[in-house]
Length: 339
Image (cartoon, rainbow, N blue to C red; front, top):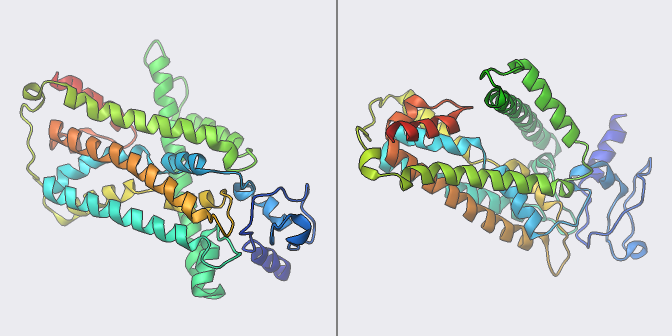
């Protein structure tokens, strides 16, 4: 059994560098690499790839990759940046935010280049990348646990955030301003929705979901920073202080952690690039890098103005007033308070 699983695990990495042609209609019980001569020069596509729904489709393009990257790169965490500035101040906040953005862009570039570091093999999984870099034993030791930890943590955060959002939506729609469902029930509703979404055949089929997610992320980031900028500066900046009152190590370290939490999405770079076509003349890294540059430019347009505008308007009050899952509403309330 272990030998069979090992062979199957090894076949996962034997992905094509050729054009994205359809594979056999059903995976064989004993998957073997497909000859390039019999399949239009596909050069090594294997039926086992059909068992990996994330990268089953190679029909992606720069637009699908851009919106996938945007949806994974802009999240609720970006609204925590003004709170981090309230602890760090203008200078150190700007320095750490800029250095983090540059580092995030650099690590993304590394992943894009490592996706096809070996000709003819496309590495679409972190575990495969770790094995290729450190060997089988050390690669699995270094790769499996962080991937499991990241997946479990991401699922937990998404269920809590999504469930709380559903509960708040129901509370807003209710006449008596009370949610008809408890928090646990909202968590179950969100989990059921996630299970339904997981039935999509591959990542490219979720392009519409990524499009909506990217649009909503850009929309709420823009609304939040436009509110204080469009208001009267004399009224907005009444009693606003930019002094960092608490300079303890824990306070500052927590603020740096908030900034680090914002730079997300690297865990999906390999999978997103795995949905792009690739050949010797036009490798997937070129298309992927164009998508990375476009998406990161939009992320920067959303992230930096939001941070500077909200902190400029509310100062150290942001850190006291905000909570993780309702920070959007708190920013709106702060704006209305100063009005």
